[in-house]
Amino acid sequence: MNPYPLTPFEEALDLILQHTPRLDVEKVAFQEALGRVLAADVHAGEPLPSFRASAMDGFAVIADDPAEWREIIGEQWAGPASPLVVSLGRTVRITTGAPVPPGADAVVPVEYSEQAGGQVRFTRDVRPGDNLRPVGEDIASGQLVLPADTVIDPAGIGLLASMNRLHVPVYRRPVVAVLSTGHEIVEPGAAIAPGQIRDANRYTIMSSVVRAGGIPLSLGIVPDKEDALRIAFHQGLTQADVFISSGGVSMGERDLSRVLIEEWGTVHFGQVKQKPGRPTVFAIVDRPEFLHRRLIFGLPGFPVASLVSFENLVRPALRQMAGHTCLFRPTVKARLTHAIHRKGNRIEFQRACVEWRDGEWHATVTGLQTSGRLLSLAGANALLRLPIGAKRLEPGDIVTAIRIDQPEQ
Image (cartoon, rainbow, N blue to C red; front, side, top):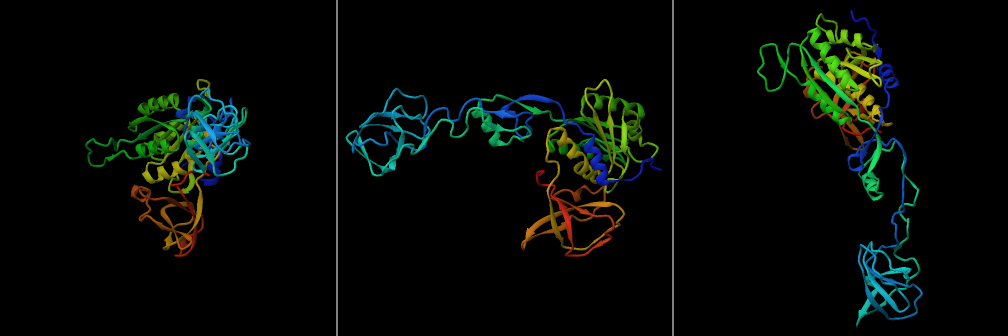
């Protein structure tokens, strides 16, 4: 018998997030900060633009100049400022983004000009400030530009570059050690004997770690031998922030991962009231030799159960460690296209495709929903969250669909 009670899914998730710390802060080059979470406010050290700039191709002028024709005394291109000065009866040809010469207080677009013999007149009235970008129009000196907890996107990268912020403080990405266990598991590319299978779990989990913003550390495949597993556990917990084992967490004689998890850490739950993924273990490791708390997840050996547990329980924890405050995928209400028969004693996550048509979402499960059929997740864009107690759902019933193809919000 499993010594741990069945923990309700929501309680299991709450326990994980309660014990998941944000990681320490590191400074990274701004061009490497995409998707990272800022650990401090970023203020502008200088205004942007730092000079008066033309917003149009045209002529820099004095707006109240009474002269009908004005002499073109030179050109100002985008780049270093020339020594030209605009005075009454004179103008400077100018390009978009170029510094406006001293004396000028407006820019007339070229399409409102007539030129002849080195002079120009204008076909539209001009007012002071027209088509001129003042100092600090975009960003004032000292202005808060990117607050702490901002997830840096491409626009943020551009802002950091424009402000000359070469390095920024961000929360560190979690390093996640991933281990596959079992005598029956072999590497892809290796010959297999009867009764053996190729390792899919470690690669799906490591890929999921990358998509969650973490850094995977492969510990390979370790057979169900206590000494070998103990070495792997020590390596993973020494080198990583999170340790994930796949398989060996049920109640068989060779399910040794659960035993070692109990040795290393404090187990907060050992099975979850969910389908798939009931034999999921969560523990924390607080030891003096570690600078901060380690998390251990013992995931089931069946590929779908392992991946669904990762998506719903591990991924939010990894994002919280990396500083994110948006932890959960968006959900939509979808209408079933077919009936679903199920046992209703656990919350169930069925793999599905949802699509928008006729003004609403429609959901279709991806075939056979067994825990070992990884094909049910390939191409799925949603998990249908089916509540406890619902034993039969009819075509047209409304269900909650977790959009696993969409970012957290």
